[in-house]
Amino acid sequence: MADRPALALARAALKPVLDFALPPRCPGCGAITGEPHRFCFDCWSELEFLGDPCCSCCGLPFGFGPGGEEHCGACLADPPAFDRMRAAVAYADIPRKVALKLKYGGRPGVAETIARFVERHLTAGQDAVLTPVPLHRWRIWKRGYNQAALIATALSRRSGVEAKVDLLDRIKATPPLRGMNPSQRRDAVRGAFRVAPSHKQAVRGMAIILVDDVYTSGATADACARVLKRAGAARVDVLCWARVVKEE
Ligand SMILES: [Zn+2]
Ligand SMILES: [Zn+2]
Image 1 (tube, rainbow, N blue to C red):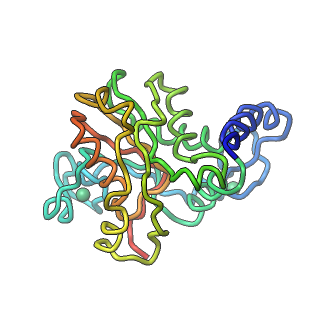
Image 2 (image 1 turned 180 degrees about the vertical axis):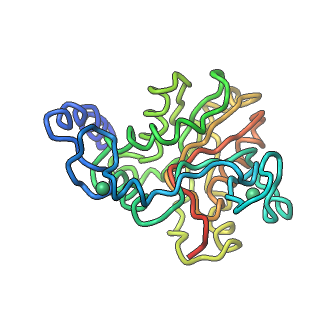
């Protein structure tokens, strides 16, 4: 049981070699493409890339308007514990398929694809530290890896910003948040995270970039940022692959 994550890591390390031998495929639909980590034309044209103008805190796109330092109504009414959240694309069919391939499809190479798209939002200094939203230990045993840790590691490789994948612990297994309203989500993740005891001292004064695959209501990112700030983190930014722009 205990060596499952190690096995998964070994598999993840082998994967680039296996990928190399196969023709590169579109991370969205699986069509053969000319180059690795490239979407085919159809999938590419469906992606909605996020950027300015948006809420300077949570990254919610503004249809028009100044962007800059503006905050959206939700962030003004109830400021999140994180300083800045950015995602590469709006959550929709193709980004969902990509996230599922990474999460359940045994395709850790997708983390590299995601890192390429998320990297442009990485504005923190080189002294910042990348860390993933943690999974509960049971889930890691079941799945073999934490998809957010794979993205954080791939981002670290590309950017040179250090990754510490075990800064946070998930001490409570949380139910799937799908279908819950924002306050139910907040209740569900309350008390779910803590700073790993071995990193408590190091977090003080640290600029942290929290990495996750999908940002839905922000409850999870907020809960993680809250414990990091409470432990003395100077700044917490959040980077995600896809952000829900309209709640389903
Ligand atoms: Zn495609
Ligand atoms: Zn906002």
